[in-house]
Image (cartoon, rainbow, N blue to C red; front, side, top):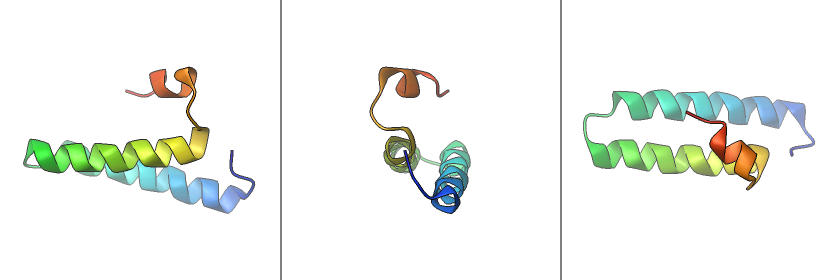
Length: 57
């Protein structure tokens, strides 16, 4: 987990933004690209744990 609270908040905001962008995409390919970026951001926030991956959506 991040040691800097400010960085964690920025990543959470980025995650929310990416997820909203994925919902609004016109094509599946664009949405998948946003989802991949969101997944990378989630991994930076919470790491690669089964619980963290299952808790979303």
